[in-house]
Amino acid sequence: MLVGLARAPFIWGATKRTEEQFRRILISESAHLIWRLRNDRVINERQPYSEKEISQCWLGALNCRLCMDCLLTDKRKYSKKVILKSIVLGMWWNTLENDEALPEDWTKEIGVLVGMVK
Image (cartoon, rainbow, N blue to C red):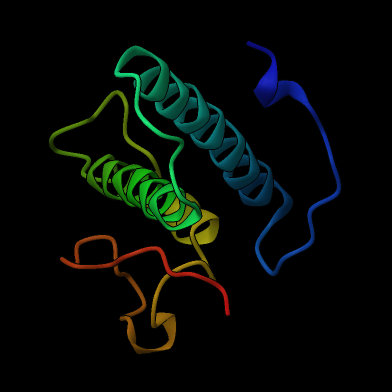
């Protein structure tokens, strides 16, 4: 799959590297969700999903990815696969629900969720 190889301008406040990584996460998670929802609909012969159901599934998938990224910042557990906290903080900057109220390093906080932009 060549989804992660595409390049497009993406302007936010973080560094170019974290913006690119976040864009790749969005594309790959979205493509996987489309595939998963389509298979579920076809195999289980169900009605198409509503827009609200798709939004909830998409946010759930992004929240799972956020939790995985936060877990992978633990150097003791994942010494070879560790992700730097600065990269995780930069990638998910300005996408979290109520991000103004979060501490500077929220990677160990419970209940941090991806929010909808209003």
